[in-house]
Length: 370
Image (cartoon, rainbow, N blue to C red; front, side):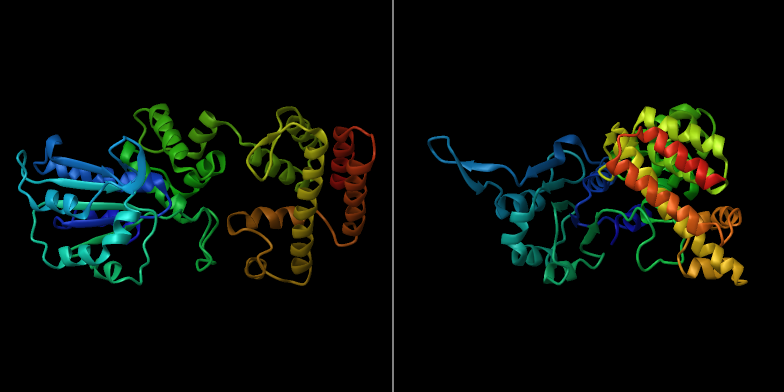
């Protein structure tokens, strides 16, 4: 089952003797292990009965040199699982980095599963498991559970095309995770947070922690709270500039562009660049994409088309479609070819001339907004 499903169901299930925690999202795997440990201690487990192995440990030969062989043996692990704890009511045995251990002992583990009647619990943490194997299929939720902790989609999954941009696996996780801090956050606010932090769960966790302190006794974390604490992200500054151009607000757009040149711009690798030429080229190409979308929307509107048609053709993200329509209505079909000419000229100047990139962008903004 997916990690989010596990979190919802875990407190309502009976104790399970075997778990495999699989996937490439380390933070979620740690969360899953934390939830299981928390329940272990709340139900009479003690520190002495928590046994942890690590598959990265290696054997040493008599001379003390590393041999590279796995030091964790199946019998060692199973002996721990089968023996009665000396302290507490039961034992929790965790094997991290257990890919090699699992690969060599799948048949033995299946045999253990079929005959398991232990009050103790075994957990294997692995990077991946083939769900077509007998072991994966044996994890039926009664004797064992496979917890899948894969990277979360930071936008609607390909099969969720009708969902708005702010409704994704990652924003839903943020909503759920905020409850661990005693806070409520809605999907739109979660999306705002995601825009500022990126999709690293550890960073998001730290920012939710900071927001929970910042909001104090207030139950909800709002977009305003996020903006007050974290400010406006580099990506949002570019979007705000494009919105100002779309509204033909020359003064605001020029001020925003100058601010971007001053504070830098985030590139595709999420590194901040202060190179004026690179920033200018990015602004021109981004303006081109926005104006292209507005022109397509304008043509649909001129033919009597509707918002539904615009969404179907994916000319605007669902959360921003009304804003894009309003911007498109500031232009007319006759002026768009000329706007195109201005953007091509600006792109050429950025790449070949010695003119100030800031001056080139200021001139382009003035031409697009007039």
